[in-house]
Amino acid sequence: MDISNYVDNVYKPMKIDNAFERSVDVDDMRDLCIEKAVDVLDEYDPKNSEGASFMTFLNQCLRNRQIDFERKLNTRNKVIDKKSVDEMMEIELQGENAQNLIEKNMGYQTTDKYLFEEKEESLLILQQYADYIIGFMEHRGKKYSDVKKLYYRIFYSESLINCIRKETGDNEECYPSHILDAFLFRFSDYILTEPCRTIYEIYHSSMHTYDYILHNGNEETLNIPLSGKVLISYFADVEKKKVSDANISQYRKSYKECLKDLFELDI
Image (cartoon, rainbow, N blue to C red; front, side, top):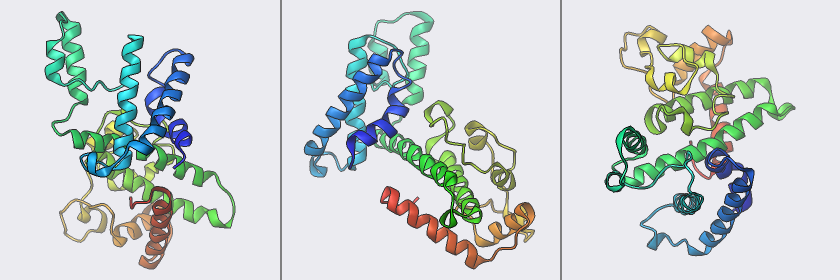
C-alpha cells in the first residue's frame, strides 16, 4: 500500500484540507498522518484490533492523530469530535453555544462505534470510487468507448443511490465535493420518484415501483442492483437504444472486475 498516495489523494482531501485554515497546518497535519500511517503498518494486528479491518484501524489512528493536533492548535474545525455525548455534557459550557455544540456532536455520533467506523470507511471508499469513474470518463480510445462509459456511469449512479440511501446518509458536507460529477441524472430521474440534483434529495426520494417502469402489476419498489428488464426499459425509453440481458451482463461483469482490481472488494 502506498501510504503517501493514500494520505495525499484520499485522506487529506476529505479530512485535512477543510479542517485547517492555514496551509502550514495542513502541511504539518499531512506529514503527521503519513508518519502515523507508516507506524500503523507495523502496529496493526487483527487479533489485537477488535477484529477491525486494516483500513478501519488506519482511519481510526489517523483521526486520533488529527484530533490531538487540533487540540494543540486550539482551533474549531470540521473534524468529527470523538467525545461522547456524556463527555460533552461534562464540559462547562453555557447557553446556546453549548447546546449547538452538543447537537452537532450528536449528529456525528452513532450508538455503535463499529457502524460509525464503517460509515467513515464507506465515505473514504466513495472518494476513491468517484475518482476512478471520473478518470475513466476522461480517457479516450477503444478500451474507453462511449457505450462502455455510459454503462459505467449507470452502474456508478445505481451504486451511489444505494449507498446514499442505505449507508452514508444525507449530510452533504461528509461527501467528496465531486461525488456527483460522474452521476447520471437522467438515469436517477427514471428510477426515483422525484428529480434529484443533490445528495439530500437522493436520500429523501423514493424508488419507483416495478409496475411504474415495466407495467407488470408488481407494486414492490425497485431493488438495486436493478434487474435486466428495468435497465432494458431505461435504455429503450431514455437512451433510445436497444440492449439485451447479455449486453448488460457483459458490461456489469467488466465493471465489477475493474472495481475488484481497484478496491480488492465488490461494490
